[in-house]
Amino acid sequence: MGTNTTVASVFRPLLTAALGTIPPPVRFEFWDGSSLTPRAGDTVGAVVVRSPDALAHMVWAPGELGLVRAYVSGELDFSGDIFTVLRSLQSGAPRDARLGADAAVKALGAAARVGALRRRPGPPEQEAHQRGRLHSKRRDSEAISHHYDVGNEFYELVLGESLTYSCARFVSPGDDGRSGPDASMPLADAQAAKHDLICRKLGLDRGPGMRLLDVGCGWGSMAIHAATHYGARVVGITISAAQADLARKRVAAAGVGDQVEIRLQDYRDMAGERFDAVSSIGMFEHVGAERAGQYFDTLFALLGPGGRLLNHAISSPGGSRISGRSFIGRYVFPDGELLDAGVTAQLMQRAGFELRDVEALREHYALTLRAWVKNLQDDWSRAVDLVGVGRARVWLLYMAGSALGFEDGGIGIHQVLGVVPEASGEAGMPASRRAWM
Image (cartoon, rainbow, N blue to C red; front, side):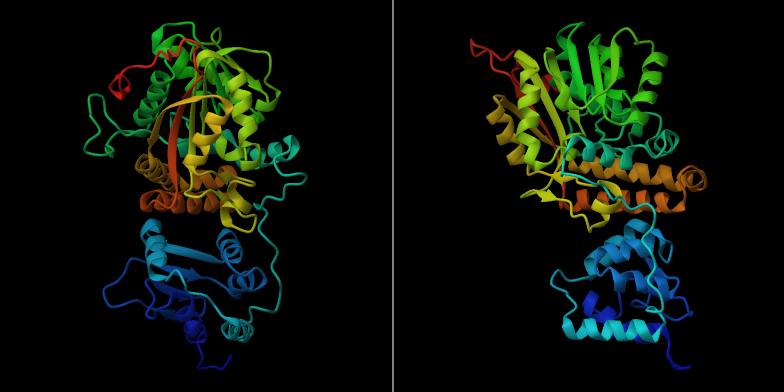
């Protein structure tokens, strides 16, 4: 590269092609001190390219995977408010912006000129590399372990005192919900409100002693709430050893050890038992489209007439299998799949459930994720001490990006309530939703 040539000048044409505009929506800063600056007065933040290795990651793994490898390894970073920077990049890039063959050749030439092709950097150690048949028990166990067995202390830091890893419900007591989610509500209260809503939808308020199965029980928060507030007898199952260990300790500390049993068990091994209700909260995303019908068949067989299932899961219009070359698929939720809410409802009906209620909560998940990001950023040094800077960066990007996805409607979340029909046609349901509010 010539003495008067800067990295910014070399990559200006490529950013124009990728983003569809120059000046860019945010500041781009390069390791040689050069930069590309947005319009005057636009100071939302910056994309910081720290070394030629950032570009090497992108050359050797074109597309999202290369960008994420550069970010996780620390060769590429963001300054300023991460939500604003990501949103600006998203809004600044046209949907049809693509690097054609000619631009790709120029990109390689530009990378060579700034020394980005001198070596091929390896992928960060935080990448998942599961083996075996998709959604086999062994492979699902590996995928779950990759995401959940990173350390209970880290999850306590991120999730807060409720230790609940699913969408909260930001509706204060007595609020009719007409004004939208109550963003001022503390996260722990919002998680308790979500658990309480599910308990009431499942009919646990009809009296103590009802038997609940909590599939994918996490660290036991739903089980503890149902036992403490409704006198339910709960079996919680998970295939994460770390979760099961802490969940048992939390159950004992809550004084409900005689009501709650936590098992290290796959849902496919559940048979010959009978429950009054089943909660599936943040579990269905790991099941996969191919096995979704079997999932609901299995849960239906565990319920008697009048038994209820509440499936609380992230959804995607038209459905979406998370690619193994995407950020989420390689670093966060290996083998994850999001179903269309309509398909989920259809599969529940095919299994034999009568559909009784569908509720969307995507605005609530955006608030939940923003609260988790704040927890992580407020105690960043400790998070890095617990899991390392690479994994902390993974969780920051994943949660911030997901919050934006829920805010713009790219992804959703739905609670779908199904009931096993009684021979008489009675379902024991309240006359309206007001009983749950």
